[in-house]
Structure formats: C-alpha cells, structure tokens
Length: 175
Ligand code: SF4
Ligand code: SF4
Image 1 (cartoon, helix red, strand yellow):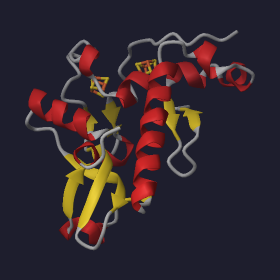
Image 2 (image 1 turned 90 degrees about the vertical axis):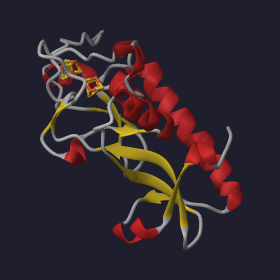
Image 3 (image 1 turned 30 degrees about the vertical axis):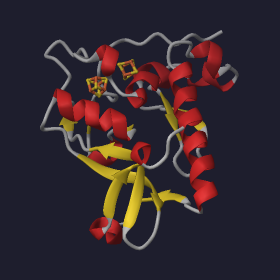
Image 4 (image 1 turned 90 degrees about the horizontal axis):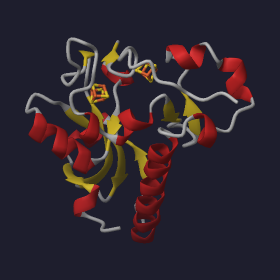
C-alpha cells in the first residue's frame, strides 16, 4: 500500500507561480497569519452573500506569489504548528467546483506514485494529512448548514461584491 512521505522540499506547496495557486484559509487563520506577519495579503474567495450590502467570508485566498513569507532559506516552514489547514492537508486538496477530496499531482511524490494512488485509500495513504482535510470538510459543512437556515448560499467572490461590507463568517455564525 502506498504511504505518502513528504520530502519537505517546500516546492509547490510553499512557492506559488501565481496568486491563484496560493492557499485558501479560514477567517481565524487569516487573522492569525496577519498577527504573525503584517505583510500577509488576503482577498475573499468562498463567501455567502447575505444581502446587497454585506457578504460573509468563509475562506480567503492568501495572496502569495513566489515564496511564502514563512518559508526559511533551508526550505522549511517556520510556523509549522500554526500553519493553516490548507498547508497541513497538502498534497490533499479540495476541488472547488464539486467540493470533493483530490490529490495534487503537482507534488513530486504524488506524481511519482500516480498508479499506486488509483487503488489506495486516502485515509491510509495520507495518515498525517487526511484528518486536516476532514476538518476542512467538517467546517464547510457546518457553516453551510447554518447559512442555509438563514437563506444564504455559498458562492465564489465576484469583483462586483468589492463594495460590500465584508464580515468574517465566524463573527456571523457560531458553530
Ligand atoms: S507535500 Fe509534496 S511538494 Fe510539498 S513539501 Fe511535501 S513532497 Fe514537497
Ligand atoms: S505557511 Fe508554511 S507550509 Fe504554508 S505555504 Fe507557508 S511555508 Fe509553506
């Protein structure tokens, strides 16, 4: 059975060709990252439209182009214990179109074991990463459930929402 062993190379998961590739983070993770480094930049990504004036943000895009601010010269993460769930679960990723669990083929280890992965169980093959991915799903499902009761639908942020008042979802819904 294939068992993922991270090379700690910091390649695709810590260095980004474009902002579109950079991690999605929950609002409380964003606030923690801002406290750790004031240069961190974010923009709303997965949101609930509340009305014509307000949106609730479920996940922000952490805008990183090039190396992450927290990657040291030796290629190691300097905030290992407090890095966001998106970093902890990689190379597991969530497909944003259908919200299914996927594996990033950009990771060199994954690329070299594509055939093994076709028949493997992600829970056994990614024992360290899988619980973090499940935590992300659990949070999204819980917020979706509460938002639905209020009549808010989850969607991707649109440029025309820029004038809306932006509110972190954990300040709107307690789960
Ligand atoms: S997850 Fe993959 S790309 Fe990231 S550090 Fe580990 S081996 Fe490298
Ligand atoms: S926080 Fe750490 S693991 Fe996440 S992208 Fe930055 S250096 Fe990589």
